[in-house]
Amino acid sequence: MAKLNLGVFFGGKSTEHEISLISAKNIIDAADKNKYNIIPVGIDKNGEFLFYNNQDYILDSHDAKKVHLGYGGLPITFSFGRDKELIGIFDKNLKIKIDVAFPVLHGSFGEDGTIQGLFEMANIPYVGAGVLGSVIGMNKDIAKKLLEKSGVKMAKFLVFDISEKGKIDFSYIISELKCPFFIKPTNSGSSVGVYKIKSESEFREKTNEVFKFCDKIMCEEAIVGKEIECSVLGNDNPAASLPGEVITSHEFYSYDAKYLDENGAQLKIPADLPEEATHKIQETAVKIFKLLNCTGMARVDGFLQENGDYIFSEINTIPGFTPISMYPKLWELNGISQTELVSRLIQLAIDKNKF
Image (cartoon, rainbow, N blue to C red):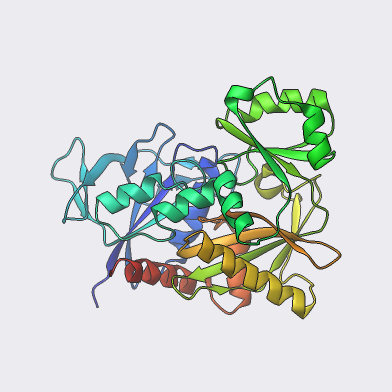
């Protein structure tokens, strides 16, 4: 069979630009080169799409503090319609057919339905959740309100609009959520802009920071329990991996603990859990995946309390694929190598596009 042209899209305008590069490098290295011609497409922090025809598309990928896009990328855009092509902006003779796209774009402008809509318009099959699933999964406010009505247990939360900035009643939050509690953007991932609040002065200061990310913030009850992550894979009949546990040396599993501090967290794979708790988490993860209209892949995060309750935290529809990321590591535990995992995700994208 002829090789498929696999367009891997990485970088982007979000605060998770650097982690996207590391994830993409891992995916490209793992992809079966007997099956796929890799078409690397970097998106710079201004949103420009760049095609790389050499191996230097991602530099310093071993270091989250130094990693950056390579030099010499050729500006491209999409040829909308049947051709499924990328075409040069300055070189009209540059035409690259894309059979399948693999967006490795964490956070805004990549995980929130924007690039998925672009692929839909360009008629290119793509890995992961569709437009609706991406939009819902990225928006914590919408996702939690939908899941709450379906009986999924979660932390208590309050949402405030930017029009309320400076007027939010701190005493009301304490009466509902107790202290400490967390504040976070409603539309960001990887713990970007997340703070643990212990006083009113800290709340006022950090609220100003969080509103820089979005026009709605979420205040959320602090849950005590084991921090558990579960990988989900599939379309109509998704399967859940064995859960893994995150044990952080920081106050909580922050962006720094995830990516910048090499001693910031320990991953226990699989998590040391009773069989009943494992099944409950897997069933809940699949239920959430379906309820939020996800396809392809997602990582479901939550907390297991001492009383056995599993409390949902958030879903990531484009989970990290860095060397320390939980999503691929949990599937390796199930006997699925990263090379096989990439191939399965690509096939799921093709299957999704048949209808």
